[in-house]
Image (tube, rainbow over all chains, first blue to last red; front, side, top):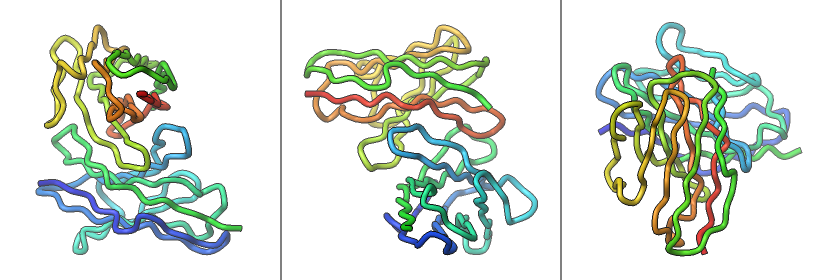
Length: 113
Length: 112
């Protein structure tokens, strides 16, 4: 069975510090990996994706993520957090030949001034 | 990308009634998806809606409870039937465009 795990329900970080939101996956095949962000009372917004190629992908709002095949991880990172980054972040995985997305449980990011 | 409009954005409903949520996309898309997101929780796929065929439902969701229409390539509706307080949730429409999902703003449903 395909699954995505976000081991942290919540991540707290001070503004200006680097942030990491963790994601690991378990799939039987080659995955496409995604990060989405959800602000309060809003739908999900696409941040970035890994399909193939360079393991480090860059996305919107200064976020980046690193694909690690051996550790089956796709952690989201940002060098310097902003208070406005506070939101709910979802990791998702999709198999290349299927249309179904599997979402993690979400991680609430709190960036404090 | 795709721009998705959902209506209503929120509603408060009485137990036993039904509500239809509309989803309009600004471009033609083959596949549309309906998700449910309970407060503070992750997304659960309800069904996949393809134009010209019946929707495909995930385990735990049935057509009688969540009938879906897909009359054309830019529009879909989800009905939540015979609602109970357990149906209180955010319902999200999404489409697959350029390999990633795009989401509507969601319809926040409260059942009293």
